[in-house]
Image 1 (cartoon, rainbow, N blue to C red):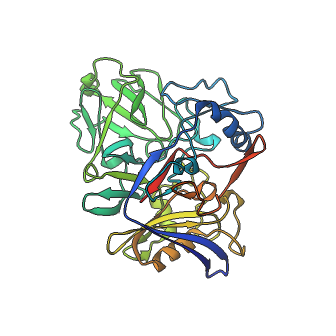
Image 2: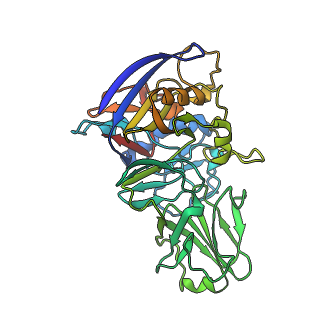
Image 3: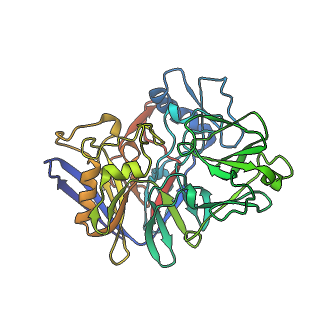
Length: 400
């Protein structure tokens, strides 16, 4: 591992502090706090994003939240890369990772949680969270690192008992399918049609199984439509049971994590505006899919950034860019701090990577040596009980 700190002046004459890390492997890690700590740490964040009267409620299970309690904000596990780095004995860097649900419009159903990861999460050869949209995923395969773009169309889902649906499914009825928010509906519920059965899946758990009425559409989850005789693949109600995911060409990967957009391909900057559309950060009608408030301009919003690329000789290169939250939306005329997406892509090309992708930036950007030393000033700070802390995130990346 090699770490370099560099002060850069962009083409727009903006002074930016960066950290460039060459490393050989990575691992996504879930981050946790003590359950008793969540309220005090999350309350100021919830109040800033949702309003002064809202309170966080730790809700890690697939049990539906009570939407009648309109001032409660359910959340899953969250933690600090800084804290995770403290006990690490091997030389490593712990960073933030990918996007997660954070804003009110992203939590409309009883199965949505603040902190839910958006997109593919594969840890130790097992898909924990399936991909939905065709966004880049950093993969650690036996033949070396690569960036792929898996989506729900590549997915084979095995129901309890092993019945497969999706890419290599064995359904008898053509209406049986895997559906998701954005691709198949922009509504928060879907009505169960005659002779159909709908299953809602959050993570790898079936959270609803209905043959009539309406089913919720989790923002980061999947709907399984079983039509005709396919309904009989499951003899009993399966709510609470687990499913398995498979993606051809990915299952031999040790780890993989999805984010986006893609920045560099074949050593050249991609068409970033087209990439944001192709990766479904925004639909043709202007509707925003999660992360719903990600700034989709390429050369205006200046913020803290995080990207990872792969060189010709299959080495990883990570870049942490110091700056603020993208909520500030500093224009291109700003002279200090942060980069635009285009500037980030230009920096990655200058580091001679063949391919590169963007990770969660703005207020989420964090990077710490093993033992807790900070590489960059975190993109956002919160105060609780007169103490200052970083933005908590659900997953970190350990770079070695």
